[in-house]
Length: 474
Ligand code: NAD
Image 1 (tube, rainbow, N blue to C red):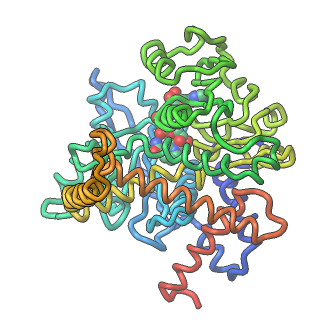
Image 2 (cartoon, helix red, strand yellow):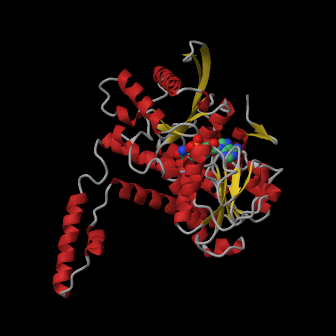
Image 3 (cartoon, rainbow, N blue to C red):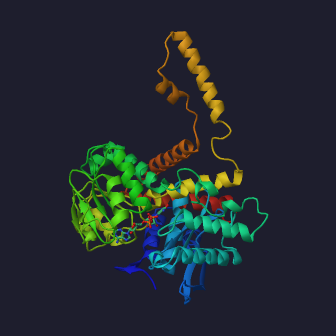
């Protein structure tokens, strides 16, 4: 089965974006073909004994797109729509994404074709552990080989099962915890990973909105405050993106889930909406909003920024002409089809591409992996030293001026960075510098108007450069 919308499968969609950018580079055709190709795909199936005694065959995949840097890295998705084309497409996107944000990994992706809501927790655990075991048998997982992470339908719980299975079967590997990221903090995870992708979406949108020229070009005023936002998907990425955007002063006017959506032109309280969604699994009856069961219509609602954060291929040639948002912030992977991309670009909308915008997750996964390999949490060595130094400096200033700082202010000045502070700072730096680099590439190519192609040009240049560094090509 292949995910086909319009004339493009999801993988063809990723390759089309690649080809457009590749044409703007001067790399050898053979090098470009190698960068574009998916290096390895492992298709597996195994039996699951359901709680009621029936046996069912479970199908899954792991694709390793590029090993120009090791390990390869990419999430694992549990969804009834998973198929090989989708997994290969997402693995390719991971290669480009890692290159764009300078995370030294190749790209990979995994998927199991199940609806996680149709299985008990015990069944999901059996599925996850058996999948991990199959990956171990074929050398498709390991801290220096291939490192999965959460994606659609999976989270810290599944990552903990993967880590435990890996450690149980590879005794003596000192770095075993680095075989997967997105783990619970108590089991080798890192503070800030859960919300990292949504926080990264916020940083990326904020960067875009800060740029006066770009905002002027699409008819918006600079700055995030007061911008009207619609978010599709209230899962990990969508909820956190909505939360951080609204905390920064944006107005969340619409929220959409797979079965319902809610709108309020005066703004929706994200926390209230999220709690309501979790309890009721329905947004039509969210107090203070106008609800609908035709949730796809939310993509066409009046707003400044649309954040599709659910699934691929949501904005297509049929609905793209009706999309009113001036900024499309791709929280999900591949939410805009190539035809829709052309339509939106022709309408002058600014698309902040997935390969950049949702890279916060892999960025903090990289920090988690580094923490696992170094066996020490960030900030542990220097935090108190820094606090003591700041306290001495503050004391000297107080003595010289004869004035005392009030305690809350003093405490905030001497506060030494803990792990979460450092993770968020590293993430912000990554998202800001990558955005600047993409804009810079766009400015260098006179005919280039879209950020997606610019981001891909940057990724291709970096991957080609690392093949060169490896001495594989001249
Ligand atoms: P998730 O499972 O936590 O959330 C997805 C949400 O979308 C769910 O609440 C689901 O009910 C909802 N949804 C499904 N179909 C929908 C529809 N038709 N309309 C509206 N809502 C719908 O998954 P996630 O981790 O938030 O991932 C979302 C997207 O972001 C995916 O494309 C994923 O590949 C991408 N992504 C995730 C991460 C990460 O760190 N989790 C990182 C990068 C990219």
